[in-house]
Image 1 (cartoon, rainbow, N blue to C red):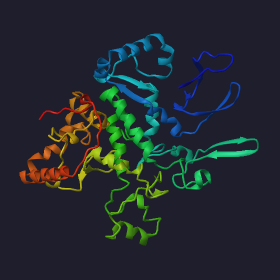
Image 2: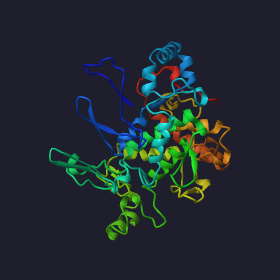
Image 3: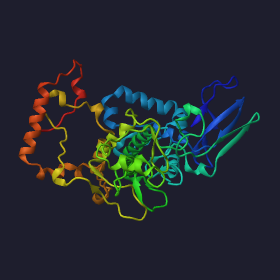
Amino acid sequence: MTYLNSSADDASGKPSVDSLWDEVDNFFYDKIHWGGNNTTPLKVRSLVGLIPLFATTTLEPELLNRFPKFKKRVNWLTENKRYLVKRNIASMETKGSGDRLLLSMVNKDRLVAILQKLFDETEFLSPHGIRSLSKYHEKNPVSMDIHGQHFSVSYLPGESDSGMFGGNSNWRGPIWFPTNFLLIESLLRFYLYYGSELKVEFPVGSGDYMNLAQAAEEVQQRLISLFVPDEKGNRPYHGNPETCNKDVLNMLNHDEHFADLANFYEYFDGDTGRGLGSKWQCGWTALVARFIQDVGVVYRPASVPGTPKRRKSYYDEDEICNYEPKATPFPPLVRRKSGKSLVNLAAHKLDLDAETPVGKVPGALSRTVSNKSFGSSISDSMHDDFMTQVREAMTTFHLPDVDVPTEELETRNT
């Protein structure tokens, strides 16, 4: 990622030679402009270096063929504005998996370099998600003296040690759901382009390699683990029993009036997973429901290097009844294409990918091992009861007058 020239000496708008990418550390850093051409990089391994991954999407071949004028303009851009394409947009000319094109701020080499830090448990990867600042800075703080004032940034897994942002908000280490969600979405989009050919070590040092869709699921599982009771019935977001008030934790984890009342904390300790900030942050921490929807009702603890990956379910198979949307006489139940989960698209590709052995397909992302396989255990009476509830709900349901084009609705074979 480079700057565009806008100085009086060169107002061409073309890329400068100055870049936010550090070729030694293989990471993006902020830079301070002191005036003129004087800049100083702030070598802090923070979300600054991860956010470029967010600017990623794929162009599906069906989309380009459906809009020939748009396709013509894309081709013209790549042929006539090559300096723009080469500067920041990766893989506009090379087709990837499924003949997709990739619009991305990072190329493959830089992506792999960033992921090496992202999936390193001594850096960004924690037992419960992705940290907002690398644990590397716990022992290696970044300091600077400016006009007699000393400034320093270090890894703080929990509460802030300053009055910034009111003193009760900290982006220097804790786990935040909104950024984790965007990282997961980005990993899935990269997977749609690179497919199973690109594999990364997760976690770094474990010797286990997986594609980016599988890595995305691993991050989801770690985030879900914040809310799942351990073998002693303790939820990590309540805090560590060894360091917190045991009577309070016992009440929150085991008392019948509190045990199942989950709190949606604002952010979480980067080491222990303890909930911090406001505890009614339903706006983004409730994204955990989306992660549960993506990985299914089966949960497993985060991978431990050198141990088999085993899944465990808190429900018997006979109790699991998952109804996927099907063709229906009720138009309001038809989903819009724009509302489809990105995971579904990645899952569909995983199922069709001959390069991925069947045994290695992540269950949460694979339709072939979804709960539809339990169809034999779903009795006719259960199905009838379910449909009766749907019909009763439909009698009181009123759909607002919304003009949705027919082509925007999914079509399914009955």
